[in-house]
Length: 406
Image 1: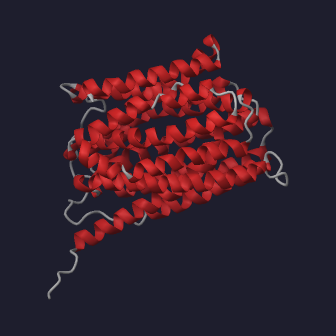
Image 2: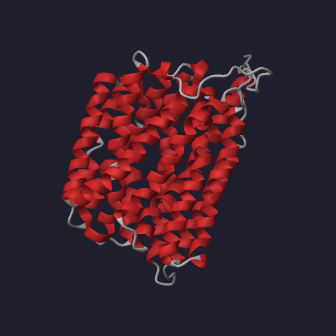
Image 3: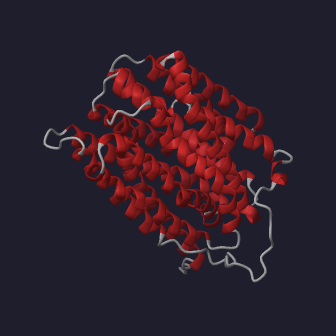
């Protein structure tokens, strides 16, 4: 019997997918350590809700200024190389976070942390645009549902593992504050470095034309309002509404965990682990759900259920309901997060990826900025718990909009 050997293009595709899997696993280590506990660390330094909100709002301001020129700059360039370079530039900032407690006292450290996160957002903006564009370039449409689902599984494993480990380290009495957080940040740096290493191993598909800067590049305006004509405009408007409502409760969560529920870092880490464990279980079914329902229906269902998490957190008076909310929230985000990415790629033309992804990144950061500023104002106006209930209702409403214009 004669068996045909794999073609070079299929070998490259399998290799790229494998490195995309390793990339997201190690990014999960970063997410379950440094990123997961950064807001909690700021709260334990004495940060206000506004300062916690600025951890996401300030980078969003920078991203709004950078997204469109970054998308234009990426036109004609190697998306793979841009992704790697920007990942190294952005993630180098996590290394500096380890040093901050040795360099500055608590009050100044908080503002230095804000500035550092702001500076990291410049290469982070390029990374967000270039990675999404690169992903759409190297992963064919028929494989995206499966790859995104498997990446979610590996992300959940990485976050769950690192979150549980970091929770134990933070509660270990032999590691005093802030040394315990420095150890957690060091774990995040290791994950970030290994994630970037696997991005460096990705190769361009053979069938793709080389992405080089043309000899006489065509000058295009940074803001191409024509892209918003037709159905893509309302589509982006719904994404803007969703992202805004997604980030309204974000600066309120650490305050609720520390000051309302009085949770230990170990309890918070177990909640994070439950969140991503349920995300893992839901992601294991994501490929089949996407094939059966389509990316649009998966997005609608996930977005509608996404408001449950802040509502339950606002209703919690003990750690048990926090853990229940975490278990439910991870499963709903597995559907919503994957649906957002897959549905976006369905609507973006493959011959104009960077510009459309830059516009999406603009919408994402405008929503991040709006939500991160609305959350503290809402919390101060009506109280922490009512603000979380309102945020849950707004998430539900924004999810319903996908059923109309998504």
